[in-house]
Image (tube, rainbow, N blue to C red):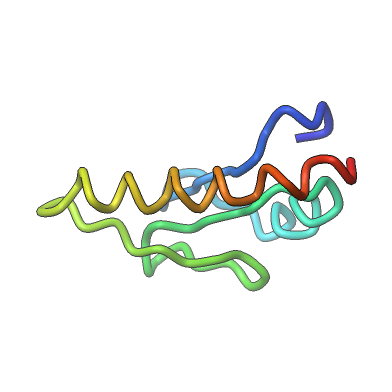
Length: 74
């Protein structure tokens, strides 16, 4: 994240650290959780539906792309 090359970080139940929200915010990186078991305060939650995986993934990628204009402030 510190390099400015990461527009979004997506975490599930295996990759959770509560401090990630603060770090992501500092570097203008969108933090997205995909499991209700791994919600992090300060992160956007987008439930991943394995029965509609393609649509869920498209929505997550679109959310990451939408953060690109804020990257100029890094």
